[in-house]
Length: 76
Image (tube, rainbow, N blue to C red; front, side, top):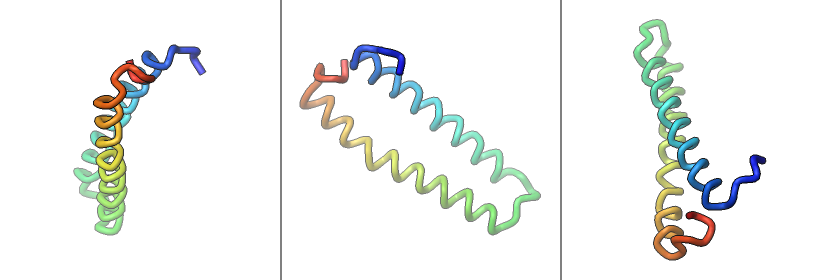
């Protein structure tokens, strides 16, 4: 969308993703600290947070492998 060369686009995506993860974690913590939240709502927040963390953990080894095997092909 921004016409960035692939290495710069990769770096921008990594920074953007990290920012979203941080914001999501902060929002989840805020929700769980809210005394007005029902137990069902807390379970839902924890379930979604677990899904997000699991998805990120599942993808991370792929990116490490990609960087180790092709450090300049599309990743900078």
